[in-house]
Image (tube, rainbow, N blue to C red; front, side, top):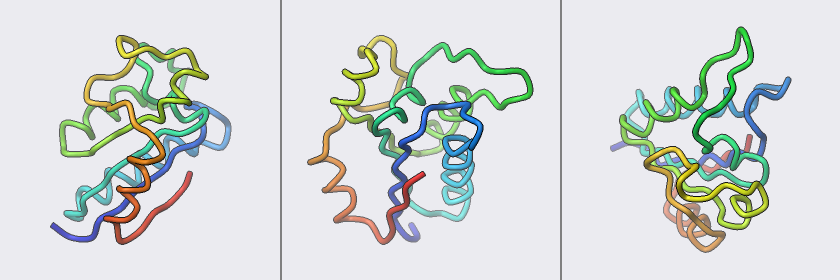
Length: 118
């Protein structure tokens, strides 16, 4: 395995800046480069982990993309506090996403070569 990377997504899906989409695209590119990639969903980014997205016309289905990335080895956690703030329960989350914490994120960062925030 190559370098280890943590990506923190703080933006909700389908915003005009497309940060959530760019973060997931980058995660996929890094996986293709044999990097170990972990994504932590924080703040409004927790919405990226919710099942049943309403995909705006012309946008990529981020639920489908994230599910495919998880199947390819992407590790994903969502901040428990952010999940609570967004009223997302375990049943509403995309399978494969772990309820996380700042302690989990700190451990991931300590084990990583690089951390990026989108």
